[in-house]
Amino acid sequence: MKTNRTDPILQDAGVSQVVPSPPTDSSASASCASFAVLMGWQAERMQAAIDEDKWLLSERAGTDVGSVVAEQDFMKRFLKGCAVDWRREFCGAICSHRNECALGKAMLAAV
Image (cartoon, rainbow, N blue to C red; front, side, top):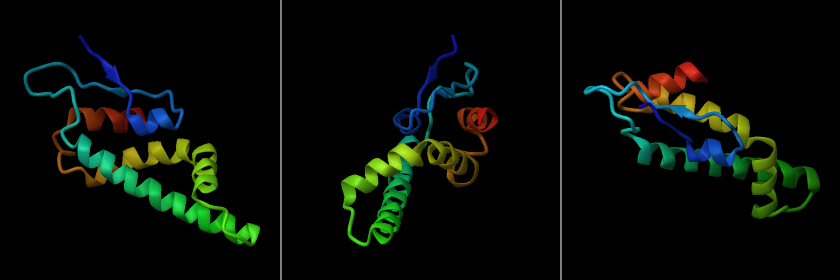
């Protein structure tokens, strides 16, 4: 039986897309072999993007808007688009399992 699971970053972004599980056979794993690496990589990308948004918002306001305001603004305005792009970038160019990963190939085909 095929199952789907939601990528936590995509879920937090409000993206209703699920990451399709690969076909079940002896050669395909139903989970991401680099999931921990993916989560760490996405967290770093998100923090850098929030920091940049904070800088831009603070420049516009003429004062430091603070991390909470920047995080809320980023989550509201940008995360949905970034989350999908980041997953595509990771699965397509960074993941060391990209050439043999059925889950990554399915993710790239679905995006």
